[in-house]
Structure formats: C-alpha cells, structure tokens
Image (cartoon, rainbow, N blue to C red; front, top):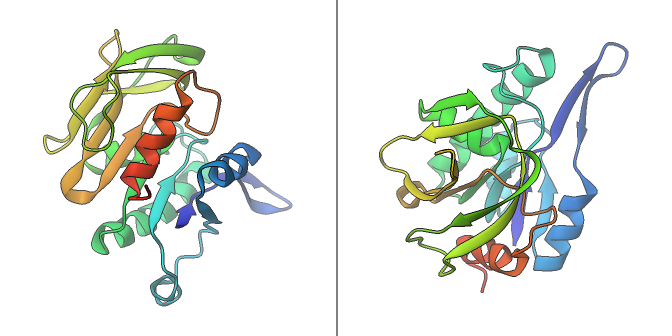
Length: 204
C-alpha cells in the first residue's frame, strides 16, 4: 500500500526550508507492511493523479501556526491544507497523528487548547464503539502540548482521557481517523494499534 506521509518542517536562513521524517516511521511502516512516500510539499495535482495513493498520514512534529506563529509552521499549514483537500476530494483515507489530529480538527473549526501532563508519559484509555477495532482498552504514549475537547459533530469520539481531552476520533463519512498518540513510537498495546491502522487502510 502506498501511503503518503507529511514531514516535519524547519527553516534556516542559509538553507531555507528543510523536511525530515523520523526513522521511527520508516521502521514502523516496514514492520506493518506499508510503503511510505514522504511528501515533499510540492503540490502538483497532475503528478499526484498518476500515483496510486492508498492513504495519507498527517504526521506529528511542529505546532499549528495559529498556536505558534513562525515561518516553518505557516509553511507547513499552507502546504498540508492543499494535500488534505486533495485527499478529501478524492476519497483517500486520512490518518492524523498528534499535530495531524490538531490540523484536521482546526480545519473543521474545532477547539484546541494548551494542556498539561501529556508530554513524555503513557495513558490507559477506554475505547468506545469504533469502525476499525474491537479492543476495549489501549495503553498509549503521549507527546503533545495541545489537546482537543470538542470536535465537529460528524466525528465519532472513540476515546476520551481522564482530563476530558480526546485521544481518538473517527469521521467515517470522510474516511478520517485521528490519534493524539504516536503509533510509530513505543506503546504497550502495540499489536492492537497496528491492527487498528491496517483495518483503517483496508489492509488485512
């Protein structure tokens, strides 16, 4: 399966914009059988139309520009908006991870707020009815400074942490799945998370 994945963006005066993708993603995708295509932020519809894209991952890293105004964040937001709309228009499955979840929620005019005790820790969460997994509980990592506690009404909230922040949400009509945790990093219920992602991308 060919999965397009967005990259972390940094900016240096002498070098300009620099794109990077964590080795964790490369190793993780290889393990579960996904072929990652790093997105180079050069949106060309004609070229994308020729590539068979089975899914999009909006990865973590960076902050949204509405939360942290710098050149890299503005650039990444403007470019990811193009690829998000392309995938929505072409009914391509979209997996939002951490910042990716925040970006999708911002696109749908949801609320994002600064939160505490969500960086460098692990959570046990309960799973409500989901389209892609039967597990009742997950034990996940947490590496974010911003949380979401309200979403556009067509999202199904799948898991809420003790502080009322949303950890997992699905938008079946648009084939969107969102995690606030990182599947590519250590999780204590990794097999269940892997199955969740593979079921979402329709890989059995």
